[in-house]
Image 1 (tube, rainbow, N blue to C red):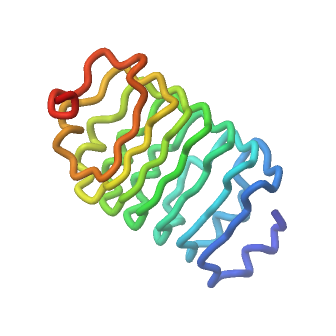
Image 2: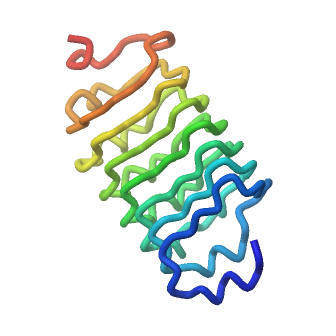
Length: 168
């Protein structure tokens, strides 16, 4: 990513999918504070920046198909976020701070190493899709059954007990 990308102060969407971006998040992107869509899918990034707050207007964060091992807690500062796609990474946990992204409608966290999801996600009143298949989920919080979800996917192979309302 060229350092001069920061001159694009009014840029609203940036699609850098499948560009062989490796290891760390490209630092020059932090200057693009007007982004509403950031697509970094299909790279080999291991890390996102610890502070995501410069992306206050971000509505879609797509970082699937990387090798991310964590999502920084600062994801909670992305109040405008409506789509979060972290599928096909190496995530063992999702930060509880995602529960403060009150506008989230879609969370795609397929094919990671998730065993549970934070209870804070159950407070997301606008969440429609929670896609967790391909994870060794062992427990879903009972409040998941009361969420206004349109779509919930998970594998039952490792699940010790589904929330009662979902099981019936």
